[in-house]
Length: 221
Ligand code: C5P
Image (cartoon, rainbow, N blue to C red):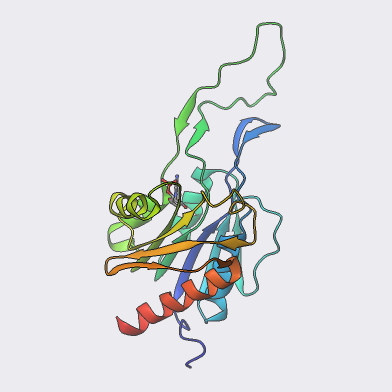
């Protein structure tokens, strides 16, 4: 039906931060609220897609119509994404921690007079790049996000090539610091065919417009 253009399509969305344990009670995280990713999952579901939302810890309700897989770490997020394949479209909106603590302690670290512990970091898997290079398991359409300052479009265009995804939604995070946690977003949609700069709008409106673009893409392929 025209109002459910994504009926029969499978979508995978990542959202939220990841939490990377230091020990059983402490972790490294970031300020991602999950609002944009959750809104995208909900918008794709409203257009009829069967949506799996793989999300780090957020304060948000589950978007209606989505199967939500809660995870904490980047490695758990990657495993959950791989388990959710095959998918027609993947949208990676999560703010994945670039690094985890190497050899996180399974006992609470103590102040033992020996000074603060040195935390060694290890690189986390890049979920967007992994999905983009997944060979025959690769979703037909892979969409990434890029939070940038400065020359937002040029930097995000380079990121699109480096990650191997099809589209990049570039956020301008220099326009105040309200994108992280805020209700509005100012984005550029970067595709092979060129760049669309969208006006500042609510994250729900960005999500609805992105879901429409996904639906239009599948109508023309
Ligand atoms: O490299 P950068 O973190 O700026 O890239 C942002 C994009 O890559 C987002 O789509 C984010 O969800 C994704 N990403 C990922 N796994 C990582 C790091 C980033 O999926 N480890």
